[in-house]
Amino acid sequence: MMTDRKMSDDGPLAPWFDAARDDAPLASGDWLARMEAMALAEQPVPRAVSRPVPERRSGWLREALGQLGGWPAMAGLAAACVAGVWLGAVAPSDWTGMGTTDSLISAAEPASAYDYAMLGL
Amino acid sequence: MPYDAMSDQNDEALLAAYAAGEPAAARALTLRLAPKAFSVAMRMLKDRAEAEDVAQEALLRLWRAAPGWRTGEAQVSTWLYRVVSNLCIDRMRRRRGGFADLESVAEPEDPAPSAASALQDTARGQALEAALDALPERQKQAVVLRHLEGLSNPEIAEIMDIGVRAVESLTARGRKALEGLLAPRRDELGYDDD
View 1 (tube, rainbow over the protein chains, first blue to last red):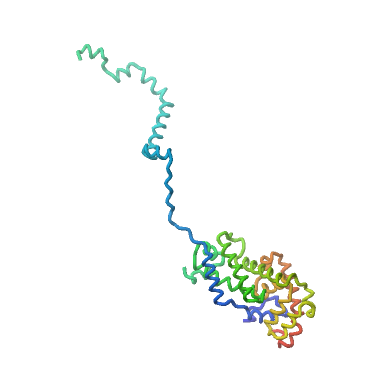
View 2 (cartoon, chains in turn yellow, cyan; view 1 turned 180 degrees about the vertical axis):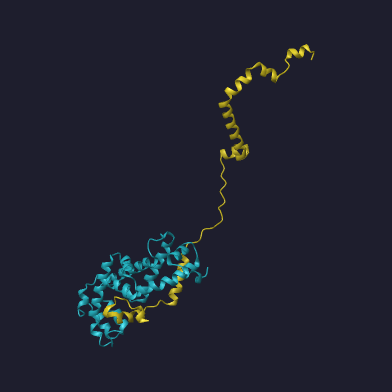
């Protein structure tokens, strides 16, 4: 054992170092047990895996949103807004002609009030 | 996880498991590191109660450093040896009230009579330990880590925060001083070599 553990640069002191290595100070079992207890006492506690329950907060915006029907209703409102803006932006070219042509009016209303009067209706 | 399942993991992996709250890692690391810390402290201080205090303080610092340990930055055992060594040197300086000169080793009748007289009644290992006590702190630290704990010179350089060549110089001077101290005991202790 001594030869196995001999350091290459022990030099002439090799037998002395060997003897000292063989006489290594050993920790007592009691002290080791205390060190283990300390390690466990100091050990960080693992974080809980469960997700924390979000705190319910109240405010005027949250209440108004709730009365309107919550986020689904807000999504509907937003979609309606977008549709309105889109119609506003696109409509002039598409809708003007349709609204002013006589044929389109007669197509929308085939008989006028005069026609109904003549027919005795 | 049982201890056996962790015995093949390196210190750094165990420390990460410790920081994650794995109790088996706490036990495995204690069994692996506490005896080393105690051994170095005992060789440096030659007082069981003080060595236990120092090793405990070093281990406590390790456990508290575990959550912020940066992987790959330092070896756990090297870090621990460094803390133990520094704590030991602090205590030795307080005990001695200053730094001992190498000259005190070269001339045994000077301020090292305790080492010389201790050599009278001790066997080989104890004689060396007693002679080590007469070395300046840094020489003693380097010799203990190199020749008794078996660490490599680069490891010791990291522990002592000096260069490898400075370690070689310290250990060489330490060995020379020890040879001078132990020379009168060579015949008496009955051998020159294996």
